[in-house]
Image 1: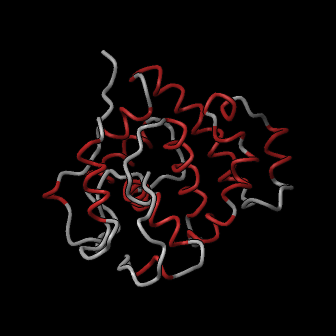
Image 2: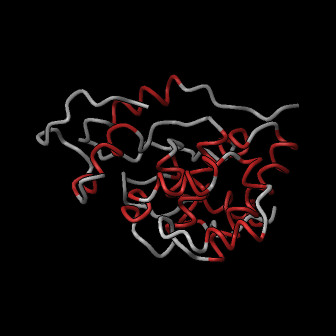
Length: 205
């Protein structure tokens, strides 16, 4: 994760970063920087699934509420949630009260535990789908990719829910599996450097 060199509005950023007051900080310090921590990857998969049909600003402004509601997205804790927890969360006005998406988060935590048992980490699974440069177009011109389609298909086969190819591609953009910052964005070189230094996790043998 980076610290922006200057928070001034005159710095060139991706056009979407000016879309809401919450976006510049998120753009400058999180979006596109590679992540290898299971909890953060799981959290982002969950938040992306909640975003389906909504704006990212809606989710971002509620992110701390989601973290409180889902125990910081600790996979083992979420996996142990019950129908009583679902009922409680459906009364929580601080999050998106969508039964299917709430139940999907709990289901996906259980599927994540299975995946971690098989491959050693969620990160190893995620990064095995890192897009190849030749499958990517100009920055921010794509809404999915062959690698995102493949990852979504594999997740579905493993019983994960609310994670289609477009959602998975947005996850990949934000978690640094590709650098989709605009060519002239001042953060793009920082992400390039972070990705070059990032040690890709591998599955346990």
